[in-house]
Length: 106
Image 1 (cartoon, rainbow, N blue to C red):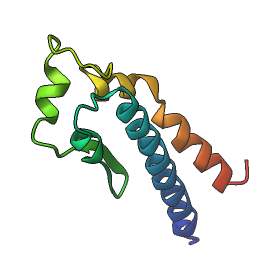
Image 2: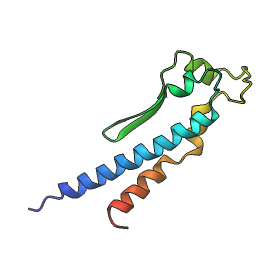
Image 3: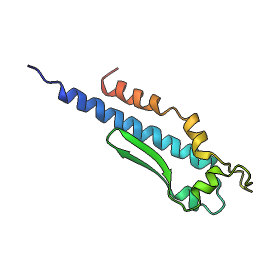
Image 4: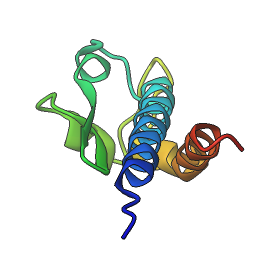
């Protein structure tokens, strides 16, 4: 019986690479949209990858308030829902697909 584990591992590695790249692009876009009043918010952004699961998050204490409060106005033009908007604008799955195709020689 022939095992195909090495191929699966290559696919998983490619998917992780694409996930990391795609979420990095999402964080970059989110930072462009986020309020920059003191830059603490933008500096607290991070991408975390665990196996084939990933997330973009902010650890600043006021991140959730800034994200959810639609009434606040920012001199720098930042907006509420900055992470949500970035998630809608960046196609992370396309990054995963591209890295997987590339790894498989396609």
